[in-house]
Length: 402
Image (tube, rainbow, N blue to C red; front, top):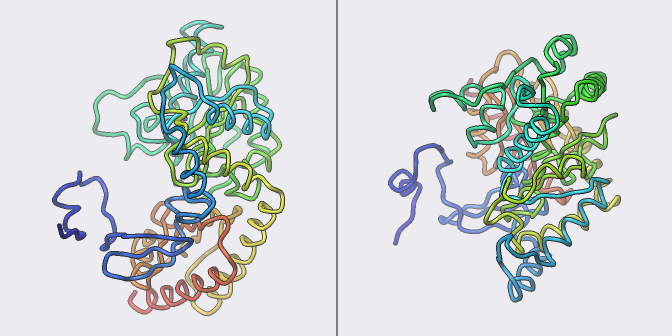
């Protein structure tokens, strides 16, 4: 059976527009298509393959664990799931964990939990969720409606109610909006899909203060920013506040589907038997890999290297930008990096991404104005150099045709 890019159009839902190639294999930072072309990958599966493609250590864990157990459901408990829970709670200081299959499911769980806590402790009128413009929290109908981008939630009929969107980092508007009817506030400490935009410390301090005043759960969506991506195990560690509920996914199992919600006993106790659940969540194999990832990525030595690589990439991009001016700035939080296009090229990040692809460099976008890079956290310096040469060629080519 011959498989080509055209096969996608023939057999798949048309909700994606993948690049013109079909991947056959990948290892480390390299991706190979079924025509023998080799690409340098600075996407890591949208910040999922935190240790690169098919890492040897992960393969070893999968081989060992899969000989013993793959899946049993949550009617039973197993050592792999409980071990990962204990490691995450130990690293963060939270008291309870819930596992699911993705970031969207993790946020769905967190939002349902915030409403259940408010319902049982204060009454059904306390149901408002505050979210922020340009946020992204997943694709379930609840989570995509909570996300602050109407283009993703319009066109599917009546939306879940009692959801309020306000500008990000706007203290005055937040003060006017939160009330006794607010049950939860959800935010990304660094908006990923929104353009790599960091929450201000002063804003977070006020949000934490008013959530406490109005008994609203503060939820941090760390689906993209967590598991070492920003240079600490979770990004909240670089802020002056700690959320009541934390969601994680993406890099947590280095490519295997997983999501996690971490919180305290006083919140978790409201999810009694039957109130929430999942068939595949807490899958033994994914949790076995997750335990390996947590131990490796949470190491201070590993995290320090993430910060060092971040600074090095920033230096490299600045050198490229001096030769071929294109970027107005670099939003760089660990290895979550946004290259902001200048005014003359606003809205053209997709075209730049395609130009990078032409030069065998895989990149991401964040809105129309930002080229997003999310390389493997363990990317080597020589591989960064190789990627930066391709980026320079791409930028030069891009500017020559504009």
